Image (cartoon, rainbow, N blue to C red; front, side, top):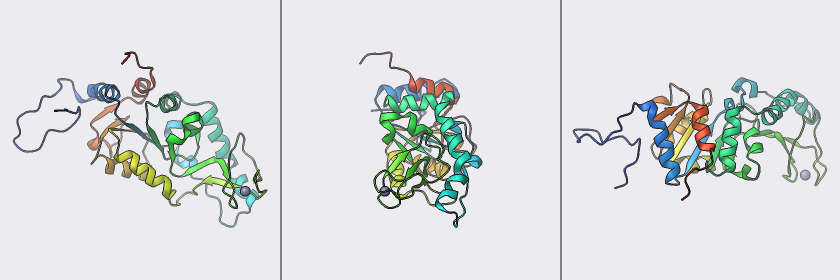
Amino acid sequence: MTGRLGQRPPAGDAEPVQREEQPQTGDWRSLLLSTMASRGKIVLVAGPGLAGMTVEQQLVAVPPEAGENEAWRTLEPLVEASLRAASEPTEELSLAARAVRESRIAAAIYLGVDGALSWLAARRSDAVIEVYGSVTRARCPRCGTRIQLSRAPGRAPRCPRCGAAMQPDAVPPGGEPLRRKLREAIYEATTADLLVACCLDQCTLGTTLTLAATRFTRLLLLGDDPVLRPAASATAPPREALRLLAAKPTVQQ
Ligand SMILES: [Zn+2]
């Protein structure tokens, strides 16, 4: 049989299942290492805290009546902070991005709108599912062209293809997540062999998705989260766990 670490023994009067002697906090290494060794699918779900940003900081509302340039002016401080988060990344963000680039993380569901993780994931940016989009990209409402911003534009950039004023490629605060991205996120989370959750406090969607996915997969919780803790197979210190995920494999297979 293929016993899975972290799997709960059946309820009732079942015989004691072989259990690790270590306390739960020590289990996270073996949980992560065994999943990596068996080439299991590891999916990360993370909030903007990974990029060193807060949820409040990202909730910048653009008034509905704002003109095309005013929208970008309102977002300017957030776009600047987001670009800074990518150019001066926290260690956790760097490690997570490296783990995505090295395909140690199969997919990353990201709840922030800073775009920092997908930017740092470089050629594997498609593996980062930004369910609320990113304020560091502009999208053309006419032809759908998207461009990555290298600085806060201050006024609406023009579409390189059709010349229309471009809009931020992000969902405004309180808006619905992008439907296609959400479908993708649910698929990835529920088909993972191990879901790794990080910085989800105040991310209702991320927390809900993670809790729902634990019916299908095991959860490794990075840091603490009173809502997610009861559903977690193990908890780990974020930096140490991300270091392990990002490290080059030491054993040749
Ligand atoms: Zn266009």
